[in-house]
Image (tube, rainbow, N blue to C red):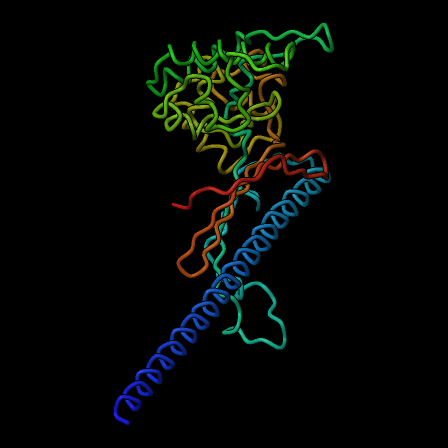
Length: 322
């Protein structure tokens, strides 16, 4: 009887161990499914919030365009679109469902800002296209090369890099116009970081970033939003100290048109400040939205092009939040 009792006890212990193992596996699968579902729900919630933030920014730009049409006002840094949104809990300015309390809302915090991309010099301006169709050809813009040469000098950057990047930009622009097949020339950059393709170093890009951008078409520099360095580089004879004074002056009294800008910028003339190089209004903006969900940070950047009352998103990208 004792051997039988021992075998029965061993069988019972094995059965308990098997049941415990199966129960643990089932609990782990249930926990994993809940975590996956929670992560997916957070991802979708974050995506919708960021889409809403972008739509909100587009609405602000549309209303600004409407006000500009009615008053003839210029774009400047004193307008609502230029005011950064400090981090705020969504429940503080979004209406909560009447069936939910503030404690039941997702603990999400949103912040962001809009940047006038025409406050920066457009690197694509270095090469211009003349003509159309089969007769179109690309050539280096001497005036813009002179502007960027002055900027590189102001920032103590190597002029040799500018020369190489300009040559590569011309080469890839010509290649894109005449032959869609792969070639040895770099790809035409669409974002600022892609200027590395043209031969600019990481250090040069870091120093240039506040003053240079890449836009899909030739653009004008907004005198109301440009940095002192960009102003000094784009207006011959305007040194950096005078440009700083212009930045200080326009903070209280923005330029209303090019005529008023010429009258107030030291040394400016109708030959150095023209409608082919400068403006007091902008069409391209970068929207930056930053979302914090507990310990998770998500940052998204988008380029918005404004044409009259219409706003179009040219690109969107997620970036590593710092």
